[in-house]
Amino acid sequence: MSDQNTNVPVFETVPLEEEHNEPISPPTDTVIPEEIPEELTPEDVVKPGSNSGDGPPLIGDDLPPMMEEDGDNKKRIIFIAVGVVVFILVFIFALAAMFSLGKKPGKIELEYWGLWEDEKIFEGVIQDYETQHPNVNITYIKQTPEDYRLKLVTRINEGNGPDIFRFHNTWLPSMVDVVSPLPSKIMSNQEFEKTFYKVAQTDLKLGDAYYGLPLEIDGLVLIYNNELLRKAGITTPPKTWEDLLSAANTLRVQDADGNILTSGISLGTANNIEHFSDILGWMLLQNGASLSNLNSNEAIEVLANYRQFAEPPLNFLERKNA
Image: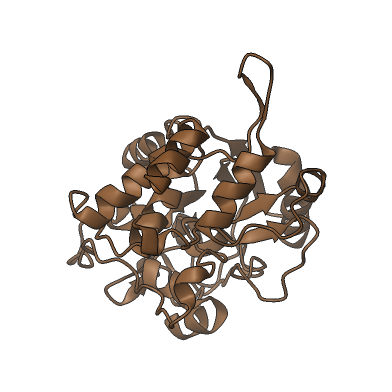
């Protein structure tokens, strides 16, 4: 970033003890429907992979609308609960096809694929649902994120995929052939729009139908250690790039050979920085760069500035003062 933009922050500094009063995630109490409508018939269900009718149009590369900036916004934080890693809980409503009009369903076996949570996390929820619906048995299987997407699509196409699974909101256009729309008898479009935030409505709608139920929003924030800041004599958490650079240099602890014992901040590389692409993407947007043109001066400026966090600190300071 240029000299005039070096005060632009990219993170919200959030202390561990700070509480948020604003909701940052959609409600999660609708993950499993309370009741299974007995009047639902197989004709009401669109099966995944079905070729009947025209599929909904695919969404292109449109990005969600950027946040508007006011005059002083560039010196402030832009990352509060940014839904950059949103996972969606999807029901393959094949279970509804098991019902016949006027008949009670038999034993139903459902398989739920999770990613991060161990089985014990969901034990209570699953037991409560099974108590209310004695004919339903839910098996939770924790998957690994490395090959999850490929495994998910492959298994569904083969006809032996999970009944309940997660997918990232950005996957929907490429998964339209293996998921089915949310049946109106489960939740109407109007109910969906009254229940969930606008971002979920935008990300989960293709054509006139919604696909999936929002489960969580993972927002990027910068968490700082009050104790380390206090010991280093830093009384105010960093709010700008200048503050962040100064604090990182002050917090860095090295041994006599120059080896880093305590790093001031983990930035500047890709392999060891979780969600580096999200961080870098917001830096690009903040500096006025287009995500589709990384050869622009604004983008090159950001890439160079990001890389400097992984270089010896004096290099950056010397270049600034040159």
